[in-house]
Image (cartoon, chains in turn orange, cyan):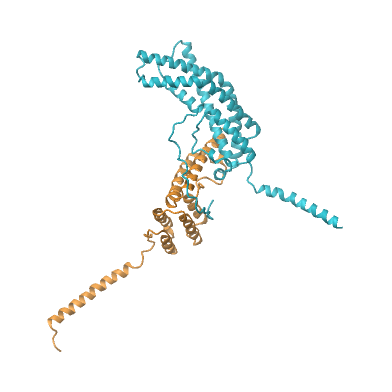
Amino acid sequence: MKPLKPICLYVIVVVLLSIVVTGCQHTQTTRATPPALCTLPTTMNFETAIAESKADLENTACHIRFEAYFQNLLKIAKGSPEMKNRTLFSKFLIWANEQGIITRNQSKKYYNSYFNTTFMSLPNEYNICSSCSKKEVLTREMQKELVLKEEGLLKACGDKQTYYAACKQFNSTLMVLDAVCDACLNE
Amino acid sequence: MQKRTCCFSIVILALSLFVFQPVAANTQSPTLRLFPTTVVENIKQTGEAAMAMEESLQDIMLELSKQMESYDASSCDGAEADQGCSEIVRQLSQTYIEMLTQMEGQLPKMERSIGMTKKSLEKRLRQEIGRKMTARDMQKSIAGKSLSTEHSSPSYTRRGRLSEKFKQYYDLVAMGSRMGGNGSLIEVAAEMYLDTRDVTNMIAMTRDEIGRARIFAELNQAYAMITPEMNLMVKKVKVVIFGEVEDGDGIPDPIAGSGEGVYISPLEE
């Protein structure tokens, strides 16, 4: 057996080294390739973001992050506000309920708080006279919900008409509450 | 035989109409009894009383406004010792007492009328809305109103004279009782009630002020300066009786939207 020439030895060493290095790099890439669990979509396309969110949320481990997914979708929708976003959000929430991620009431609360004029912060169980002792709290809750409607209707869907209808109803409801509670307390 | 069959069919038809009519009627939302005839009559009388008060105060208020402008323009605030300023203050306090005297003459009629309207509205608001509706039901009624949508104000900031406002109320109520628009009538009743509350407060304040002015008169003294009470009273009369409101409050009017694709979600409440 002939001894190897130094040049050949050098080539072999270089080849071996490059295999080792590329091998390591390959290992690193394979570790990063599968998407980390429950990572919020970063796309700016709203429909793609919905599809990616749904794909993630099919994994039960991600259910706990539903609120984060919803807020992320809202952020992406605000980048390209369109009327159809309202429909897409509704379908997404119905899907989330059907998948058992959120309850029917939760899906209603999300939808109506962000995309409808109805104020979910208004009690629907007891009559107005019974709710008058909490009028101040109610007013603050309604103010917070009006901000959500601004986020959803105005900024994410560009639906000025419905948003202003919500504003008008906010003012009218507060005025009627003021008068009715005064009448209830003066009994 | 044919005649009998025909009669029988008519009877069955009449019976079925009789049976199903109430069912059909029940599917409509219940009509709120917010404005019985007595309340409507009270509203009319309150409008007339407000008109009489406005007419009697109109010239005096104009004079008072001019004198107050002159007081401000001469920088009299804090310089009442100045001869010119003390003359302005003397004239101003004289006009002010005149205003109170005029109001005193109109107060009993106004107080009686407003008191009756307030009381009956209070009872109706409590019985028909406060006890029968949840807050969410009430919002839904407002949202689905069928009466004039132009009526709904962005917030409770009344503009225009009290008499005009009560005339509008009267017209809306008279029209509403024919058309049966619950939502808008709820707003009208609430707004009217808040107006009567404001006027009641103003009447109480006027009585206090008249009492104070009498004490000054008995002591043979004139107001030596513009008191905060005086300022507040004049402001209150301007706002409550003449409906002068500063701009800048409330949410801007709706911008005409595209209105495209009205979507109704199954999740809507």
